[in-house]
Length: 122
Image (cartoon, rainbow, N blue to C red; front, side, top):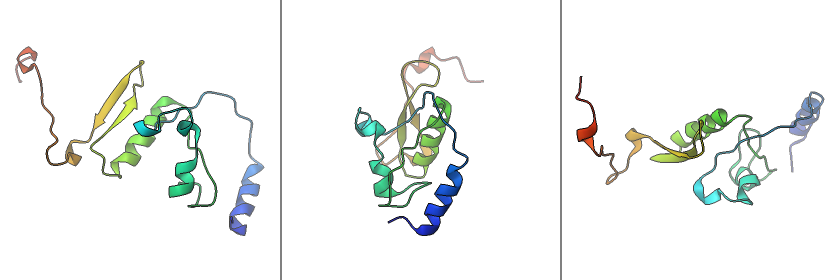
């Protein structure tokens, strides 16, 4: 059941709603990167979100550009304790692995390969 005050605020805000047509983006963990889950709001109803309460209604959180989608995902993952996240490239087809070095778990490491091909340190 949605609280009465919240419903009033939703109806009030809907007066300012405008039609939208365009492409939106969503970054999701790999296990949810499939046709059904990527357009599902199940996570928001289970865990709540910025604009919904747990168990009340689903919200599908999308971004109007790829950069915002990556930023939003990166910032939310930083607070979740992940070592890294796999995100789509912002400039070409492909994927990027965004690693948070200060969050690496014991046994995880970063290593430079082919270091002999790098220019000397300055």
